[in-house]
Image (cartoon, rainbow, N blue to C red; front, top):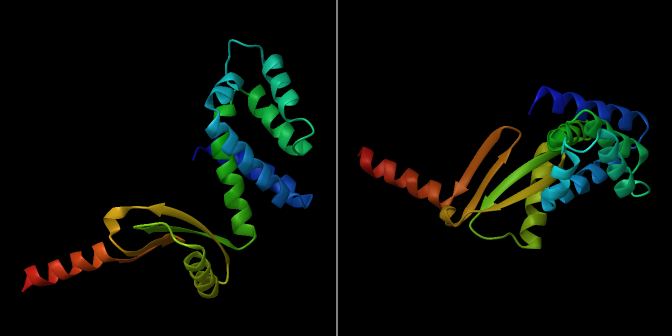
Length: 177
């Protein structure tokens, strides 16, 4: 993450937290980030320097006014004015990190051979919440090469309880003897 993305994202968070708008703006920032990912052409349009700054700001205003909080709208306009709309994703990540840190939320990256069902996801979240004392956001990845079990990465730690890992450990034990 660039210093720009961190500074602007944390700045927006500080303003919104002070006004008790941090959760609502987090949801808006996440929705905008998703929209930009799904419609890259719109993001490129906002970053098109052959158009005047005023025209690009007008497009943002017409697109988002009345649909998002004024702070979020003004933040987008500032990024467009500074020719930095391409950094929105980094700003959004910094905002989310600040929110999660201040609200005791941990992100658990869970890799499994197949998708978790609702019951498995709920049990995992309950167990992780009990262990950490934090709310848990699960980001799931599917990787058939794990064969079975769970690979969990959270708070900078890695917990590997996959069949692939256990088979590798058995193989190492056999080859060492």
